[in-house]
Amino acid sequence: MPHRGESASGALVPIRVWDLPTRAFHWVLALTIIGSVVSGHLDALAWHLRFGYLALGLLLFRLVWGFLGGRWSRFASFAYHPGTLVRYLRGTAHADEHLDVGHSPLGAFSVFAMLLMLALQIASGLVADDEVSTTGPLNRYVGNAIAQMATGWHRTGQWVLIVLITLHVGAIAFYRVRRNRNLVGPMLSGDKLLPPGTPAAADGPAAHATALLLAGLVAAVVGYIVSLGG
Image 1 (cartoon, rainbow, N blue to C red):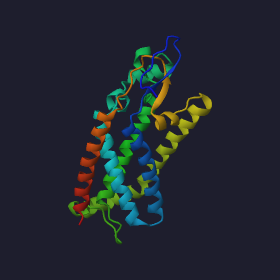
Image 2 (image 1 turned 135 degrees about the vertical axis):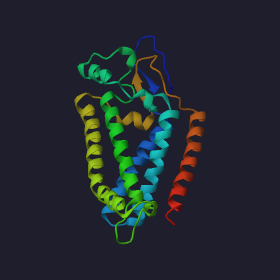
Image 3 (image 1 turned 180 degrees about the horizontal axis):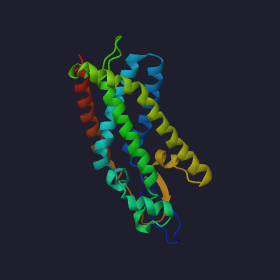
């Protein structure tokens, strides 16, 4: 599909919005969170740790990709001013703001909230101690009081994250059923049907090579963090 289209009739054309690294991050993270929750409740703690390390790598990747990625994956494209949110809710957004191309103002709030909660879950897991057989790799670097507080949060905070994810999925379903907007398809294909001239995200070999290099660096950082618990 073309990344950017032209149409003399003004019809909507497929435009690349979500670059491949962003799409890969999204779906791998979804599977990772499912695996983490299931393994935790099954007391498969070795796998729970592995999923946690993978989640850490994905989070670090996304934080950096929020500055290096395609236009609509960058934090700058959806770190909205409160006034923009008000205009969006009132239906008076400016045409050149493209608020429904990438993350809408409400969607952006959801994304930032989930990233924050994911970061808290990962950070608490890194220093947690179940007082049975499993500790996070950074547990030795914190006092017992902090470790126990982190462990308590890690057990209860998962439910906050699950609620946020449920609301996120519910919003996707709402847009599909009530507004006839498919938000899942673009996260699979990368393209949305949009007016000609809508800015497209870069998603070529250079972007993919950058993402692979970043993934390698992130893997090295995660590997080092894990080694600290050895």
